[in-house]
Length: 411
Image (cartoon, rainbow, N blue to C red):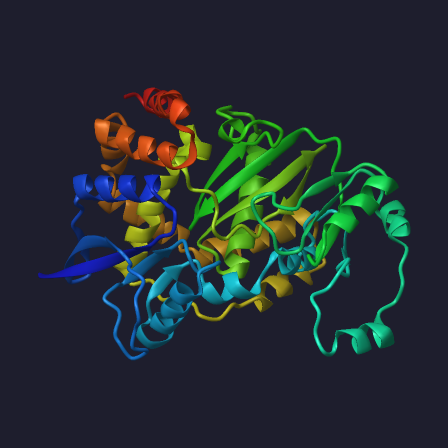
């Protein structure tokens, strides 16, 4: 049986903690996968930034990308490698580049998800250009911002149509606050969105391939406490519906790795932010949930690399629209979307792969996250973000929460 190496590249920016843990666990696991007529082993290395010949073949079978949403050189290198070499990359760079929060709202509205009422408003101000004034003079219509606020109802949220990380998001409680927020928005293109208030739960559901993890989220807390450590806070029905929504969003947009923010009010989930195709992966915010993310990344990347999962360069929306057109209940249509999504992510094949080839991953990860090497990776990220006098305090806080995770898994 021939031995083959599958090479995984990590395309990184300011990432420190998760790549170190990913590499260390993979080295300790050192899996050999028997796939068809091959014995497959894995190598991982960090992708460098340098000039490249467009015809130069890539050395990687898969790239885990953390840069294409903002760094153009890496984006264009990855795009050429997909086109010329069939590189598998998550996430799809064309989808990340083209599909912002605005598009995601519109698409999920068509699928019938409970998206809050949302308006787009023209920018408050503009960058000067030769054609701007003739265009605005001929076609721009005056509008009453207060009327829009009353139409949506207060409280509402003003937020960038393509933003991230809570930047530029403002809770608006009345007309005066709405006008002040709009005046402060400058040249940014903004949405106004109904507030789903009150609500019982604010949950972030992280999706990695067919894997999901629902986390109770407290947006009012300090950053290191927003992802709570609460367990068993959803009923099976609530968890299942949120998982189906998350997988539907991710498969629809071709995002292998994404997070879906949704509010539970009554017995309905209201997705409010689900175009997060480069989600937070840092131990300084995820802490207790950080090992799950590293392990989910490993499982999905090893499966995709070993199976030579083909990269889908183009998105296929029509099957979802066909389900949306059915005269069925919301629950039946959501089940139809989820079935398409699980087929897209090869859920059954993935589960079999993990059970056969990665059955020792949990034990290896639990052992690793108790080591000095794991603590060093945590400290390195803390040092990058926190003032010197807080480094020891927060290193111990995050390491301690991971030890709580280990104890709950029987370490």
